[in-house]
Length: 158
Image (cartoon, rainbow, N blue to C red):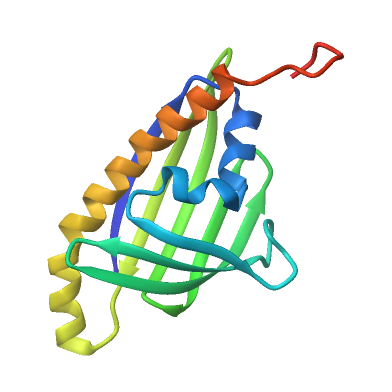
């Protein structure tokens, strides 16, 4: 299994970044190459939630069904594929200072098909690395912009 890792720094508090990334409706906004992402079943977030996704990686599209296997509020969210392209994805959250946070994105992947799958995996690796790098940049930009444009509630708290 190949793995890529990138870090996104957000001009937003930890809980805000976590809430943004925990909401499946935001995935198409920040995940580079993702063309569809939808919950399957009753849960739309948290431990046990299942999602169907399609991502465009260079010359091909890969479909996967993924399941949330770790959910710890403001700390970590992890997914593993249960069908399609074999993958693991983790978001690890850290407070930096004040209203800033970091999100470490780790993506592990492998393709089925023996030698042919490994050859395709090597072909797709640069596309996956670029998608992860662009996803990290998008997370920084989108979370920061969403936080900057938020409207405080009437009580004055965030």
